Length: 180
Image (tube, rainbow, N blue to C red):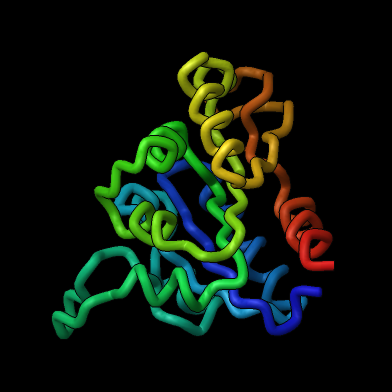
């Protein structure tokens, strides 16, 4: 049921950012339109060129376009979207959105969002288990956000535990089931 849906995909600075490519491909394959909004640190893990090539849309990262100075409207994105997915969602971004710290385009878009929001955490096991992260996730749930629980497995730190961003096919399935 993703055909014709407008999805804002928020990408943050996590090693799991590469999985966003698979999410984009899967959403588009099911007929969705995807607009990427990426944090400055997200661009350290994956390039806007890769993302815009997959989505056939310019990637939004800054409040103003550096080429022509035009304003990227977070309000317009909030009205356009049928859903917002933040994947991967770092502990930093989760903390900022839980507390309304609007210091980048992704968070201002989140705060302007009229559509349902899905958050897919990705971080090391100790960060995920930390009481502040858990409190922030509870706050997001209380706001009506949908938390896509991370998986258990091998992490970038070489540790094993809960914190791996859920696999792209499962994230797409969750969105698809939501719209059914």
